[in-house]
Amino acid sequence: MPPNRPHWHELLACPTDRAKLEPTGEGLRCGGCGRTFPIRDSVVHFLAGDTGPRGDLVSVDGTAMVRGYRRPSRLVGALRRVVSSEYFPGSDWRDAKNRVVHGARPYLVVGSGTSRYPGGVHLDIDDFPGVDLVGTAEALPFLDDSLDGALSEVVLEHVERPDVVIAETLRVLKPGARFFFIAPFLFPFHGHPSDYRRWSRQGLKADFGAFTDLEVGIHAGPCSAMVNLLTEWAYVVSGMRFPRGYTAIKGLATVLLFPIKFLDAIVNRFPEAHRLAATLYVTGRKPDGPTRARVPPVLGELSRDVGGS
Ligand SMILES: [Zn+2]
Image 1 (cartoon, helix red, strand yellow):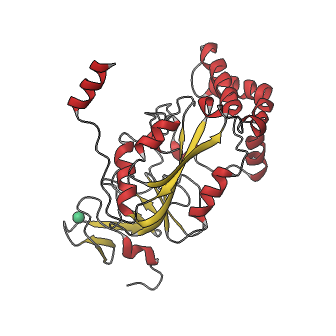
Image 2 (image 1 turned 90 degrees about the vertical axis):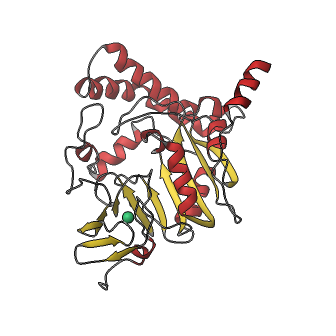
């Protein structure tokens, strides 16, 4: 084994048959199906037909994702954070996130984009800067009960089967290990590369029902949501097209409206703020005992419920 091989390589498994992987010259070989997953520049590649950075990975808006994920300069980045609909006051979500990021290691960052967390193992569908594993969240390349935490920020809406991603997260976590996920509620469509769903507070509690110690709360509140929806509305009713019209109209509207978002410092504390939240967080632990994937109600129960109402 090469001396510089990270210790979390021991926890990897074949995404198809979940068998353990053994190091070979070119990468990691599955003890079950015999496939070899290549390692290039320390990034393990689990996606079939993946031959390197796919600069052509295109979002539904027609923009190349790798270009979209290029890190801006510090000044531009700071300016964009202020003149935007993004504002995340409050300490509840931050405390919950820190319990994963500053907890036991390694923890998995699902759909990391260009984010890089100390002690995290970063998985995404393309090798953006900072990614450790190229793979899909719907078939996590890890052994059962192997990881000490999981973190995922506004990724669930982009996968076709979020239920499978949640079940996979449950499977790979050690009993008692924590997760922290952020999901959008009132948020414009944004295809990176696709965009399928939104979650209410109840929706998150139901979908993460197999975990224990669940806590759901506001990440970005109603005023943030209003800036985002109004500026997006201005773009849509302008009749212009992505990406040029988007940058111009959405940008101009945001310059005018962004101060509204700061009201969330107060509004997020109101009892009904979740009704119009932009994004919500959910956190909890994998139960210590045996776990079962949540079984949806059978058709008979559903039709009885409908008939009785
Ligand atoms: Zn295999």
